[in-house]
Length: 100
View 1 (tube, rainbow, N blue to C red):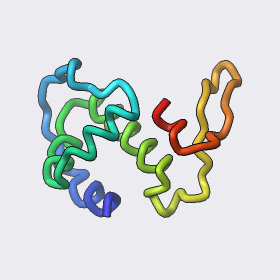
View 2 (view 1 turned 180 degrees about the vertical axis):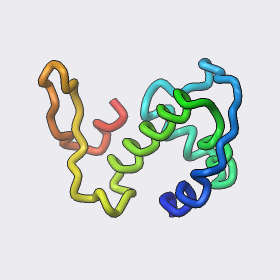
View 3 (view 1 turned 90 degrees about the horizontal axis):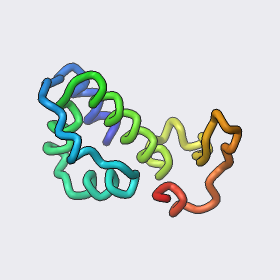
């Protein structure tokens, strides 16, 4: 369902000023924000903003949905935590680690 919603509205982009106080800083905050939105509100929120804002929304939503195993084509992908540059990448062991 999510793939369909995003694909069907990918050409509808609306520019608006970024309110940095409303940007979710953690996956937990992003998850809670998404849970509180109707599908129609999600589509509107997802498509609003400039290139930078759209970038973090796309990346954050993708990582969250994939880590929760909600993107069927990527179900074999292993969610990890850590920092690539410092070499501290390791697979998550429990679902709760997504929100840490």
